[in-house]
Amino acid sequence: MRAALQSISWVAVLLVGLLTARPSAAHEPLRERIDAFVRAEQKRQGVTGLAVGVVSHGRVVLAKGYGFANLEHQVPVTTETLFQSASVGKQFTTMAVMLLVEQGRISLSDSITKYFPDAPASWGPITLRHLLTHTSGIQDLENQLDVRKDYSDADFVRFIQGLPVEFPAGLRWSYSNSGYVLLGIIVNRVAGTSFVNVLGEQVFKPAGMKTARGISESDIIPNRAASYRVLRGALANQSWVSPSLNTTGDGSLYLSLKDMLAWDAAVERRSLLSGGSWHEILSPVTLQSGATYPYGFGWEVTERNGKPLQQHTGAWQGFKTAYARFIGDSLSIVVLANYSRTEPMDFVDGIAAIVNPALAVPPLAPIPDLEPEVTARFTSLLEQARQGTLNPAEFAYLPWWFWVGGAQSLKTQLQALGAAGPLVLVKREVLGDDRVYTYLVEFEAESRLFIVSLTPDNRVSTFQLMAN
Image (cartoon, rainbow, N blue to C red; front, side, top):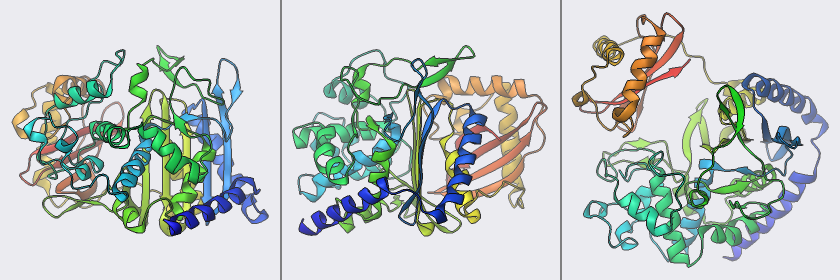
């Protein structure tokens, strides 16, 4: 504990310097280039407002707001503007969980039935670790809740208990907000207070995150940003949801850019938790097969240019967020935006490439196709999707909504695009146990990326058409 407190004090001293010092003369040209890029990208994407922070080798190169936090009152974004965290907040729920683990009050190997004794028998093998790593198999509740209804913690639990377990715990990775809602409730029950209060006292305060807090419609909250979407071709305010949907552990926080820079300093120093806990948080999950998937506890743990990249993004109620740490280059980038169509990773990737061109996302280009029989199968499936004749027996683990309305939406989209040219393989990778193929497809109207994945038994587990 004493060592942890010493580390926290060091971070506090560092943070004062980070947030008060002006960029050095050596950083000015870089800062100007990043600033020019952000302005151009903001205009290209039509982003109403955003805050961007860039830390290189321990120094803040850029910390700046762009556009408006509130269009109706013409309030500009500043470094103190509060944005909803969306799923970037999952890493803070992770902190609340791990604090309780270090206190010996819970264990990562605990079955979640210890905290939900009336849960279905299928929950027995599911542990806290499975919830943290999105390997529980519990179906995602996103887009299934009545967003106009108030839910208590008990209501959330009952709702999630009614969702199917789609695969045995630890078999696969599948992003599920349900798991983090349950984690927040577990912290609430074990700590005897809201997980937000735990964060406030044990994370936000010692890390110097002075304005980070939970979301509340009723509180008077200085510097709170509004957020925006497009409705019938025009900007509109975000859609209203029940206040209870902004109390859950899947990402219900307000954070400013200053808060995120303070958080980055704490992460850099591995403060607040032991080194062993940080190692758990930032290690890829190991599946039943022994294969790993590039996700830890509330963090994607991937790589760029052969070096570690730790990151997460978020999207909720018109807010879009991204936080990325390029470890080998000692570079951290934060993007907080209040427009639902923002692509925050476009800002992150563009800034990273300015700082170090080797961090640029490699352009997609044709690669040798060593499995023509697989491509032929996907070509047939794409045509079946156009005709609306896909056979569910060929698929496994697709999200629940695909067969409810997704397949029909895909059919409509493909028919509007016109005839498809040949599938050109541009990427092949292995994620967990699945082989993932990315093809470039030239349609009559425009090009698209077609992403398909296969399970070890050759069933299709991803079937997605994306903008190129």
